[in-house]
Amino acid sequence: MPLNIGWGEIATRLALTVAAGILIGVNRSEHGHAAGLRSTLLVCLAASLSMLQVNLLLPTAGKTSSSSAVMDLMRLPLGILSGMGFIGAGAIVRKDGLVHGLTTAATLWFVTGLGLCLGGRRAGARSSRAGSGCPGARTTQTGRRSMETRPSRHAERGRGYKRTDRGGTYLPVGGSRICD
Image 1 (spheres, rainbow, N blue to C red):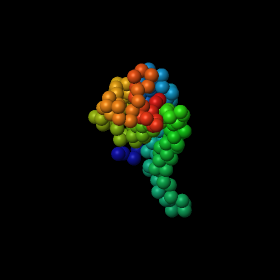
Image 2: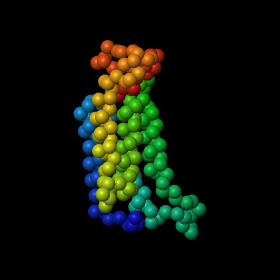
Image 3: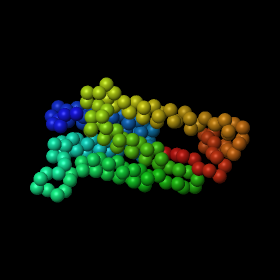
Image 4: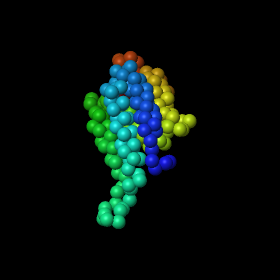
């Protein structure tokens, strides 16, 4: 990876980041979930911009002869990833045996990682796998819907599951159901 990146490279990375954020955000917005287009786009873009900033600061990394402090550039993206983990943990709520916001938290954390990868040119710019995480995320979100309403083999046999009156879904007896 070159130490000096130009405006064309920055524009390409940001364009891929915006495309990835929009692709995942539109899917969430279509289904009426909490973190929709704006949230995923902003999180992905902020993570990408932080990695771009790290890449621009790489030539100045290390310790100069007149300084006693060493610049650790990876603290910025790692702090952002950890911070998004805490924000995601705040989005998860358990109420009346139901867990809400788990997929929202996972989506925000995934989009943060994707933005860091795209900003650091690990999954974009000149790679043939540009934005390769986006189709996987979209498939996971869409495929999950068909699995939620299908009873498991344990529910069909009546082993520790009871049928609810909400669209034929099954809950573990005494357990929790994961919802968005």
